[in-house]
Image 1 (cartoon, rainbow, N blue to C red):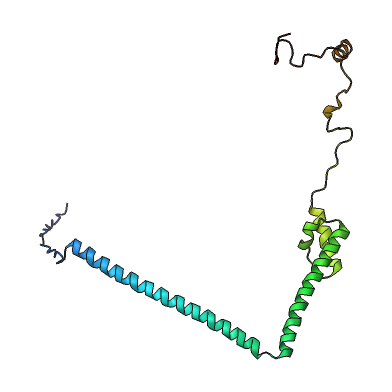
Image 2: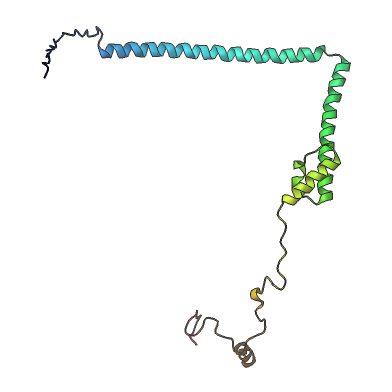
Length: 185
């Protein structure tokens, strides 16, 4: 076996000098609080200034819009008004066309505004496609009377007939049960 050289390592303790801050933690907190208050005051002031500038900007923009409106000639104003009215008229015509197509196809009026297309043919094709996706109403099965389920017999029973002919009323609560008012029978 080969000799192994053992190397001894020695760790020498080094003295670490920790400098303690000159100020105590209470003083540091007080200074930090003062700096925080100063920063908070500066932030409030900056927010006030920003709000006042924002308000001034809105005022200037409104004045600029009024100036442009005043600078427009009568012809430009009339042209602008005519364009607005044409856009409104087009929207009304489209809504009316949608309503007519929906009525023609049998689509519910609430779905008329969902129709897509520019021409009446396109609107009608869309209405038919939309109508096909709606669930079909189911017809009630024949012979079912809602007030008489199962088509039970409406004739009186033998016991009911006897009670009717004898002039006595049947015991609706069964034997021994029921509510008695006054004397017991």
